Length: 80
Image (cartoon, rainbow, N blue to C red; front, side):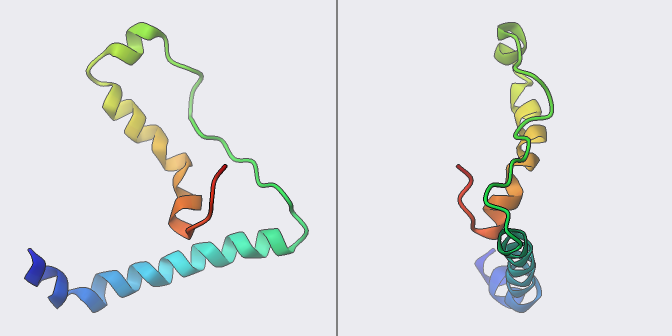
């Protein structure tokens, strides 16, 4: 697997770095336009009931909702 990574370094890792730079530049352009705080949703739904939360399929629900917190992480920005 390590050999696969090194053979495809240019194809995958450098492309990912370019995409990360573009996302970061989008955040910088928003903040440089005078925006001090960027509020974004963190979940798709309201809080789950205890029964829903304790079900085995909760991992899938959580994974589906995590994409709302990813842009700041992909850009290397702090989301506080």
